[in-house]
Amino acid sequence: MAGSLNKAMIIGNLTRDPELKQIPSGQSICSFGVATSRNWKDTAGNKQEQTEYHNVVAWGKLAEICGQYLVKGKKVYVEGRLQTHDWEGQDGVKRYKTEIICENMVMLGAPTGGSGSAGGFPAKPSAPPTPDEPGASPDDEIKIEDIPF
Image (cartoon, rainbow, N blue to C red; front, side):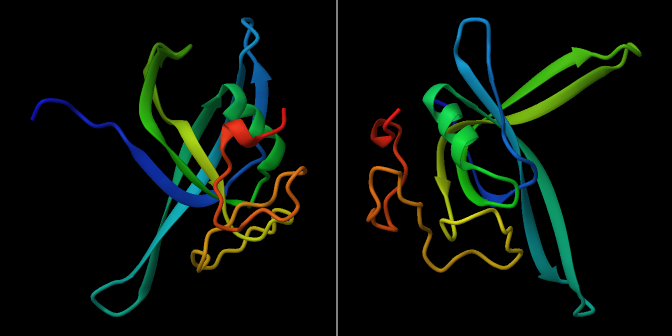
């Protein structure tokens, strides 16, 4: 095998409102959490559920879009790469944090509010129209070059 692959794709609900900041260079950074769940039946036929929590970081224009349009509870598709940071805590213990560095994001579900439906995936993912495109097709992804700011 000539190369390697570092790709993460998740669909889940935001666990908190995004936090948008600017670093000293002026570049925007947005961080938010996404929860994904897996459901199955155990050998006794009992329903089981396991939830994973993911830290997501977006940069630049994508960070600004995430900060403006995403809200806690909103269903979202996130695509990116995994990156792990390590540091030494005040107690001298080495700590690790793995994040998804977001390269693409698509808002899913109804275009209004962050109601946070706990049900399954929508039958047809949709992106809410941007302010300048009231009749945007529900199959369109939000592309950075299409955002008017």
